[in-house]
Amino acid sequence: MPGEPEVHGLLALMEIQASRLRARTAPDGAFVPITQQNRATWDQLLIRRGLNALAQAEALGGADGPYALQAALAACHARTRSSEDTDWPRIAGLYDRLRMVMPSPVVDLNRAVAYSMAFGPEAGLILVDELAEGRGAAQLRPPSGRARGLPVPGRPPCRGKGPRSKPRPPSPATRASANFLLERAAACVSHG
Image (tube, rainbow, N blue to C red; front, side):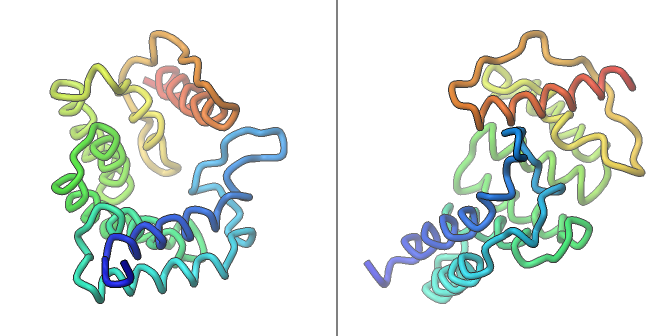
């Protein structure tokens, strides 16, 4: 399997994602979004190993495999010293490619967030609205997408309605993430 690009892509994804484990939750267990994580706590050895595995996947011609693309997305964050330095246009482009090989409502929602960060709130909201009107509307709550990507400091607050009911996620980490999204959605509604 050493010659299989997606094996290296998966390894890259696992290493880079694992590098942020300590930064993903606050001491009280609350979810910490990537834009607010303390990057000094990210494990640099895991990042280096992940970037090496990603380079190997790409060298083997696997740059467009689903795992390699997800690893490339994670690498965009791992390569920067601060959230402000994140290459959001590149991330938006990677999500464009990922949705071609691995279409899903979650990929589409993350793509909308990336577009919001790269090209402004309206670009992201257009994609969220398209998602709400098309496939995936039953699986995702568009207000959570609005809340996750917006508001961004210096950008206008999002518009729209908040979630109708609070989900009951199974794990504490998922619950913390869901609570974070609900709080963001509530903030959007109060400003809209």
